Every structure is written in structure tokens, then in C-alpha cells.
Length: 120
Image 1 (cartoon, helix red, strand yellow):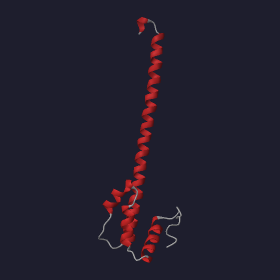
Image 2 (spheres, helix red, strand yellow; image 1 turned 180 degrees about the vertical axis):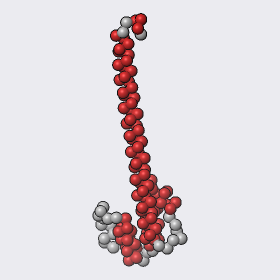
Image 3 (cartoon, one colour; image 1 turned 135 degrees about the vertical axis):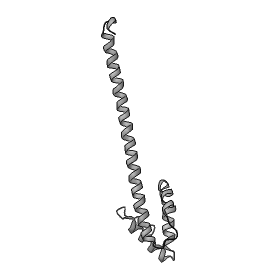
Image 4 (tube, one colour; image 1 turned 90 degrees about the vertical axis):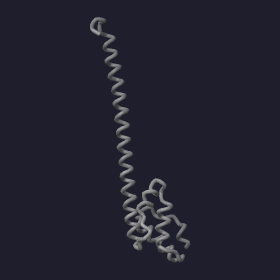
């Protein structure tokens, strides 16, 4: 039980963490389903709703379901990051276009001021 509060290696994959939690739960007399339930309920708030919608309480193969939830969560995070990256790129492009448009308008305006009155 002394290992439970110890810091965990960030290099561990989710399956190793889940197996560790299941082993701790079995030592304490718990159930694998409770571990999976706690993982889902105490997940990152942005992912909790997605994971709750995918969790099946009837299934008995908790390790496989945990793997599916893990893959789903990782793919969702990748998709959300790529969407945010796309938004950032579009925002930067818009800002650059606006800046370039202002520079072009300023150049045209200064050019018109240099022209004689009848050519404007």
C-alpha cells in the first residue's frame, strides 16, 4: 500500500497504470469495475463526458474496455489539438491578411496623394 501514493513514471502507458490500479484494488479487496469507473469519473473534465458516453457498465472485460476508452480519449485529444491548431493557423492568416491589406491601402493612398488632382 505504500507504493500507491508514490510518484509514477510518466513513461508508463495507460494499460500499465490500469493494471497497477487493478492490482492495488485487488490487494485492498476492490473490484476492477470500480477502478475503471473511478478512472472515467475522475478523468480530465474535457474528456469526462466523452468517456462516460463510451463506458459500458454491463461488460465484464474491464481491461479491454479500458484500452478502448484509452484509445478513444487519445484520438479525441489529437483531434481537438488539430482543430485548435487549424483555428490558430486561420487566425494568424487573417491577421496577416489584415495587416497586408492595411499596408497596401496605405501605399495606394500615398500614391494617390502624389498624383495630380485631375488623375485621381
